[in-house]
Structures are given as structure tokens and as C-alpha cells.
Image 1 (cartoon, rainbow, N blue to C red):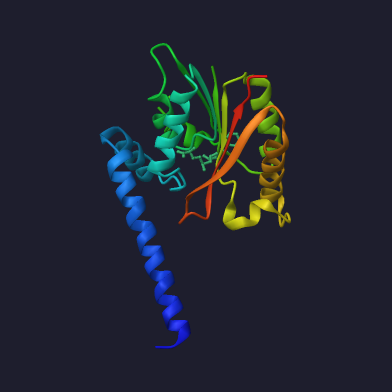
Image 2 (cartoon, helix red, strand yellow):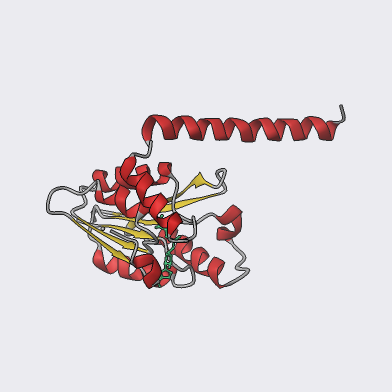
Amino acid sequence: MTGNDAELMALQQAAKTRHEIEAAITSMFAAEDEGLRAALETAKQAGLPQIQISPIQGKFLQLLATMCNAHKILEIGALAGYSGIWLARALPPGGRLITLELNPDHANVVQHSFLVFIDADKPPYPQYLDWALRLTRPGSIIVADNCIRSGKAFGPAENADIAGIIELNKRIASDPHLVSLVLAMDDDYTDGFAVAVVKHQ
Ligand SMILES: C[S@@+](CC[C@H](N)C(=O)[O-])C[C@H]1O[C@@H](n2cnc3c(N)ncnc32)[C@H](O)[C@@H]1O
């Protein structure tokens, strides 16, 4: 066996271990129930792209919404409502999920203080952040998806999508009103959420 073969085997083993860990965490902490599975099936039947967040990410959003005692949640980019279901389940009675979807074909499939989840088109991510900052208050949480992009999200900007993400990362990392971090939790740990909490001054 050559050095290259041994390295390849080690990489394959590491990838297998990561997938096993992800499957174990999903099954123990983020198993999909009938409602979530039905939402995915409905989206599939309607021919929508399968670009929703993972169950672990859904559970993480739920955790954050519960942590900040969110009574209102704003989501930008609903697709078929999969992430919306995870988020809505963290709301107390009388709480509200407001979810925005540009594409009417997607919006028709969706069925439903402050957590803002940004998961739409990437170039205006900084503008969505501006709006999120206006709407939130101390203790609120802002989450944006796809903020690692295999490392491209830290520059240089190779296109408008990446430029939007880089700008959002820079702003949340340097805004003195926020405590923030980017967490690898998707696509074999090469993509994930940017999470920011609005500080109590
Ligand atoms: C990655 S998908 C959202 C996935 C969803 N959050 C989930 O995990 O179940 C992105 C969605 O954003 C929508 N979108 C794109 N630009 C938008 C905009 N400017 N305003 C609202 N939605 C937009 C797209 O039509 C698409 O359905």
C-alpha cells in the first residue's frame, strides 16, 4: 500500500465516521416525525428542489428559538415550510411565525421576542441582516444559512452570492451589539449557520 492509498483510506474512514455521528445525533435528538416527513413528501411531489436544512439544523433552530424565548419568528426563504415547521414548534401558544417566500410555487406548498432565520437569495444577505437588526432587540437571535460554503464565505468574493455571505459574516463578527459565531453543521461539515445574539447593553 502506498502513502497515497493510506491517506485515501484515512480520509474515507473519517468521512464514514462523520456520517455515522450525524446519523446517531439525528436519530437521538432530531428524528423527523410524520409531520416533517409529510412536508418533505409534499414538496417532492410538487417537484420542488430538495434544498431544505438538515434535521440537525432544524433542531438547532428550535433550540435557539426556545433559548431566546421567541414569541415571534421571521423566516426569509420558506421553500416548502420544512424549517418553518421546526421553528413553529418552538413557539409558545399565541406565538407567530412569519415566513417570506418569493416563489409562488414554493409559497403555495407552505402551510406556517424574535428569532430571524435568513435562508433566501444570497446577494442581499447584508440587507436582510440590516432588517433583522432593526426588528430584533436584546436577547433576540439572528441565524443565516450557508455561511461557510467550503471556506469561500471568508473571502475573496468570487461572485455576488459569496460576496453577500462574506459581507454578512464580516458584519456580524465585528458588530459590537452582537455575539456571533459560524458553526459547521451541514454538507459534511463544510457549510453551516452564522448565529448572532443581540447583546443586552
Ligand atoms: C434554501 S431555500 C429555503 C429552505 C427552507 N428554509 C428550509 O430549510 O425548509 C431558499 C428559498 O428562498 C426563496 N427566495 C429566494 N429569494 C427570495 C427573496 N428575495 N425573498 C423571499 N424568498 C426568497 C427561494 O424561492 C427558495 O424557496
